[in-house]
Length: 300
Length: 228
Image 1 (cartoon, rainbow over the protein chains, first blue to last red):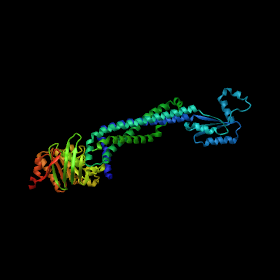
Image 2 (cartoon, rainbow over the protein chains, first blue to last red):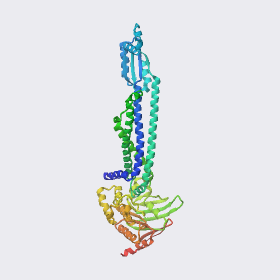
Image 3 (tube, each protein chain N blue to C red):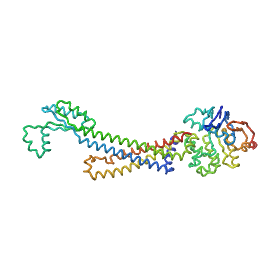
Image 4 (cartoon, chains in turn red, cyan):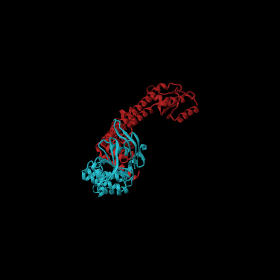
């Protein structure tokens, strides 16, 4: 098709948005509500991931070194831990440092420890695992080192966290799926009403030799344009709602810090991604709705 | 050229709309298809524009075997014919100019060609002065002329006109058929479906009469307009 005719059809599609203002506004409103729900759900999921990550980060495994281990043994353990991709942070505590820490923790009884003839504290490594789902594998690998006496890991806590995260993911993916399907169905029904009002126009076009592509293009542009407008509006509303909630948390930081809420994502950091996603999702939903609702009227 | 071989159309309601129709309309002919309401004239038109498929038999129009047309080839076929409907079927929100121009866009013509062709066909139909009017603002006769201008825009070899005088007064009806005769003299095959026998007798030419789905008469008669 010539560029001039494509331009004509695109202009026709955009002008139809204003010509059929009431139906366009109905589609716009439904898309706006759907996209708003979707974008807020995605942001909630992103923040939950960060919160879960924060909780996971406080979670450490402790590696006790066997009594009498040589300097080479310590270095070997250290290098194994450093080279393990699952471990994000490693700290080494010598016997002296371990005792000092213990004294600090038991400050009231610190004097009693002075009576000890030799330091009973083992040399220790503290390590953080990046993904709690892999904690068992990491522990097994470290336990197999000869110079390692014992590895302590909070399996129950890790398991619970993994379960919570998996459950959240399933729930949120299900919500997104349902919202998307419901949006497409409602939008396609709204657009169907608009297409129905113009069924004569479509039929006439078919009679005078228009291809399905020629007929669909303006409707496609119309659906897509309304979707992008709804996406942009959803982005603005998401920003407003998110910022209101965000300031609620940041104003009461100490309370929410307990739950790892101190690292919520500021909207400014994801603003462009949210705008792009909303507009793309809006365009996709608007277009899908239009295409679904047109098929029946093209069979002439 | 239109050719129908042993065509039968049987509707699901049990009605036999066409029974063993055989006809051939050669290029350059002017043919009246006449018959009472419900005789099968509209079914014949639907067959010729590939809106309907025969229950049995074969239909050829402009070299296309309509039985074998699928998808976008149907659109391409329809661009090779000009259709004028009894109820005009103009897009009411479009201007006269847009109604004619959009069939040229469908045929993927350039802007330059559209700017030349649309005023030409509107002028031919004496509608150039109303190019910027919305079609809903026009009278029945004016809409009919816009519909013919639209049908002629792509310079079709075959023009099928369904009851074009149904909404016109007698004077305008005669004028319109005169215009169609003129178009026919320029080389376009014209098939006009009508139930107005007076009009047909006046103009004469090849007349095909359909009664209860069957062709009962297919002959050429002389008309009064030939004397003019």
